Image (cartoon, rainbow, N blue to C red):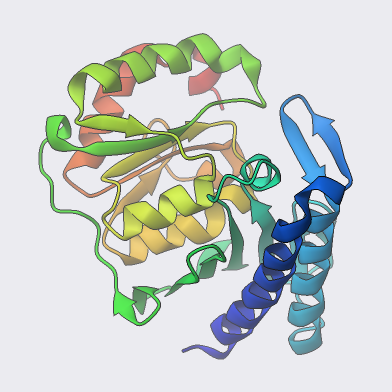
Length: 266
């Protein structure tokens, strides 16, 4: 395992410990609304502090982009951190949430870790070295027809202006796939695409920390990742499509008629 990935794993497990301990005391947590439908708790902040402390101890000159504390530092190496993806799930005791840590070097995704503290599942990837779940090599699914595919998604809860377009896309997928799933943690959804548990995934209105580690996992497992047009730049645009190579173009084709000018301009 690459030394940087090893440190990221250490950081993710530390954050997972914070989250797991807090899961036994949900009724006493302090929670506030960052924006509509977007919650944050003291656990998010404590988990993020544990991650940053671990990363900075090993790499004090690296930059940070974290969900709760924002951007800090100036470096070619940037750690992109979501300390608790699926906060709303966590606060309701719904057991679908994770820690996500990605790293870019000169803007290129290089390392990624997603840790599911509920199942003790550790997803890891380093560019050019493959993706793994614990010690098992991951590959995306081999399904060739969208009608046979199980597709993950997430509701565009932060950006309400795209709701109608999203509903139209979802209706298409409802009719032309084996099923749609919306667990509520985008990073974990992407990890499940890499593991072949989902055949594809799409979402609108995400942040870089929701996507960074998961996108690399999908790529290193043999999948394709892009924005709603299939292009690069999804981390900045906040829209993502991820799937195995056979289903990726089929998903883009199905969504294309429902892309509004605003979505195309992202």
